[in-house]
Figure 1: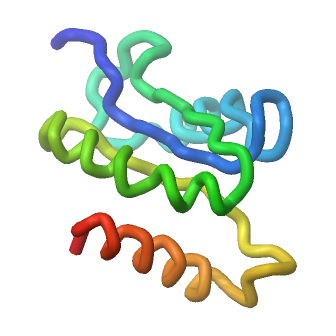
Figure 2 (figure 1 turned 180 degrees about the vertical axis):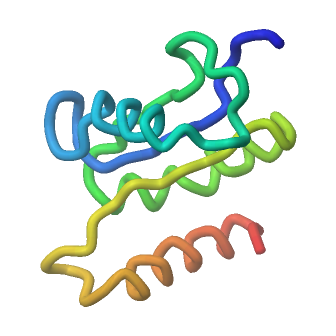
Length: 106
């Protein structure tokens, strides 16, 4: 099997701040997801620093469409936190869905 990106992780923050890409890679490797066999190389996970939550939400539909175009072997993960501007995770999820629907994703 060729070594290629299988998980795309969009996350809040800039490199070295907020959600750390090294943490994401380490967590995913320790979880050892069954759909990644074998775990070859460091390019299995591609992390994308998205700045603030608004930027992350805006970027998600395009990244999801790219993942869908790549085929069934690619997963999109989105890492965002609910804090002072979001009451709970359901409100955060609704913000993502609203943007996705505007982009034609259902």
